Image (cartoon, rainbow, N blue to C red):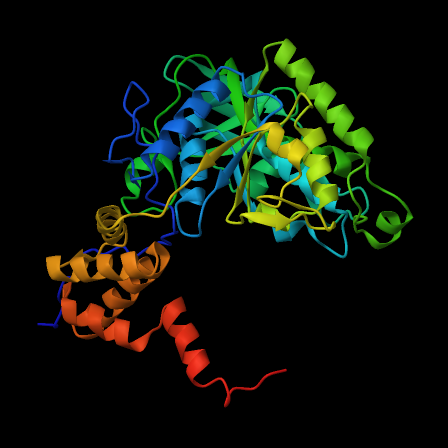
Length: 457
């Protein structure tokens, strides 16, 4: 007998664990009071409660013309609070994170980069009722005709389809464009399709579960869906989620075209004209007024905002006063610093007029117990197990150095434990990576020790 053995079914997938994937919200109770450990948030109760009040104001539309400033030392959870605010606002709320240094480009104006980021943060939910033919294809007959330029070649001329739902069966006839789409999509009997009655766009929804093909193949990668209900010709609501930046690009492509694109078949690379953006804004307002569209203002989070210059700050101040504007959150770890582009010193390195129209939330360094809880959450997120003495040692390292360094040590210790085939991170793993790597203080001491032997230029 042949040597055959069955293997257990395993599905491997790539998982990227980000620095804030464990954040699910601000971790507040019904009275907007911070719970010590909730929704992936630990500590920073004062900052979280302040952010909770800000979220409530945003939902009631009372934060217009203002921005939020998160100020605190490095590694104290400023980005985590910004992510939590976006989570609290809802699933469809866009969240764009950028650094203050990203706006400086040799190819584009600073204001263009900022306005594009702002418009990426404003979501538009469009509802549209359309007439569609929908059902399982039970009969298909594609008719061909000789090619007008080549009599030896035939092209599709029309198609006759029989579509079936649970309540009705109807035969329709369509032209050459729909026949070509059906051939290109590989649609045959047993497929559930959708044909837009106005545009003629054909969508293959999958194989019908009740059809012969859906029952024949047990192993099939194609999607299988039940036979649709109702009539074949019906009005159906479609929901599209776009941003203002997406609509800007679509309108710019429609209007683009010139000698370059005509001769070479490419699109001209240029910044989007303000007229296009004004037309998009007008269209969105019409959708909202007619009940077809809903606006979801998102969150634009600019980290290291002290790297912005006076021109960028001035633009943001003007943008806050417009009608379509997201929630702007600026984060900085500076104290009194020089405003970039000037020789003026100011709190946080921001202009005073911007600070006056902002609500400021401060964060404080984590204590040892909070660091321990965050490390426990991170170990669960990274699917690693920690022994108690190893967790205690990592918390000590975090209290002495920083939370970020302790989280990095956790990942390194997990890799060390894996190399020794250990299921749990032990104290020995933490001590080994602590000896191999340096924190900022140890690196500074090392540089001072070998200062004379290191190159200076």
